[in-house]
Image (cartoon, rainbow, N blue to C red; front, side, top):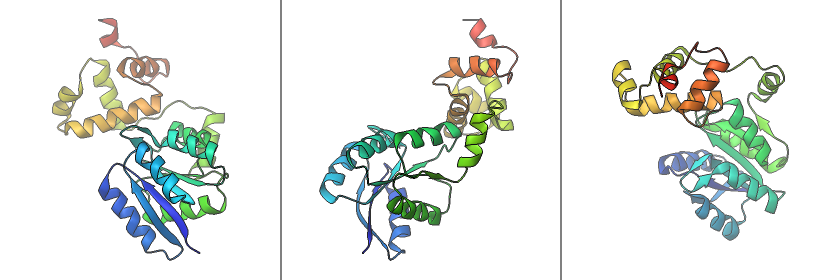
Length: 215
């Protein structure tokens, strides 16, 4: 008997890539694709998949919300959470939501298939590539670690620069600048620039916050 899978991602190309990966594996059967929480909920009711593979970021919510609702209503369902931002905080959020597995989107497709297989067999047992390391970092926190580029952008944020000026100054696209800023926020556990700068000061990543002091 094949393991039935529902794919949830708002990018059609990613869903197509995942579908091809599962279709190459004889023990899986993709029973549907959804681009939003609402579509996913409807397809779960219609198809009763054994495993749901969902992105974290969706147009009408998050895959973590979906995971929590599925776990509450269907304790035996397997849930794989995918994300572009595979930091410790997102990993633990996936664990707390009731997900069965957590996989970075830059992982090989075979890793996603393996995570889905684990989710089908052990839906309530959480698996992630760096789970042991994340647990160790939570027990012995060493503060956020930024890449050289992220540190550079953090300094520019502290100087009061926005996305467009940062992109021009560093000769990168605005999309790339936004991606770096999102990763900085995630690593610092911040929801906006002000929080990011204050937490960076508290962590010793920058010595002062001139942009905030001037406001």
